[in-house]
Image 1 (cartoon, rainbow, N blue to C red):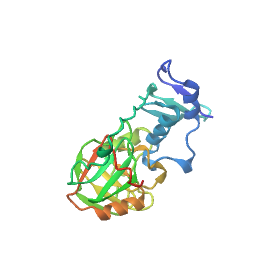
Image 2 (image 1 turned 90 degrees about the vertical axis):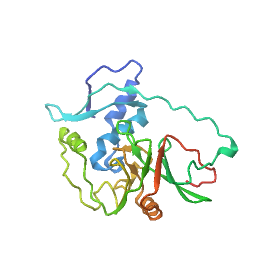
Image 3 (image 1 turned 120 degrees about the vertical axis):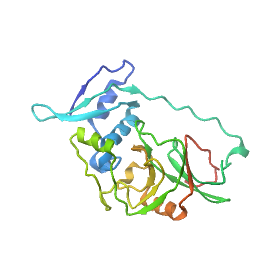
Image 4 (image 1 turned 180 degrees about the vertical axis):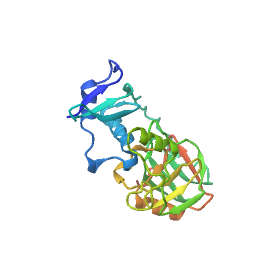
Length: 245
């Protein structure tokens, strides 16, 4: 079991034994919750879920005897418990807010809704940004649809990984190791909807801000979208109960 070193005192309200158990036993490699470039962020996402607490950052190192140690660089902080939304009135259950919108992303529920026509809406599970890298709540426009995209990590992402001794190349070419998967639907502000090389991350707050889908789902979505279509990221969306997940 790795040693755990806290760089700052934990609040008294933290369930310390549970937090230590979670940190000492991260998910096995086969259950990593995101692409390798974002592994540490997603391990934190896993900690949020299992322990109910969040940390801004942590790093791994080796002690003088070569044993793994995890150093928490910022104190753990309680995550606010989300309050359930009030139940909508029956006739308000499915009012698509704007006929011009093709897609609504429910960031809270981590689901994407595609308006196929006036009578049909499809629903897909997605991943959204981590608490430290949230997916922006705004309306975007589809600018381009890239097939077999290359990934260009931003300077901040590359600096982040370089500080941890995990340098990233300027470009990750298309292929099975590409975090973008097979398709990247380009929106504004370096945000996009894309596939993944790690489907276990779907349904989590796991990305640097993009919206991540299963590769089969992004293929279906991209076939229905056109350049100029509008995509809204909302904190929540109440769909018609007849919509199938």
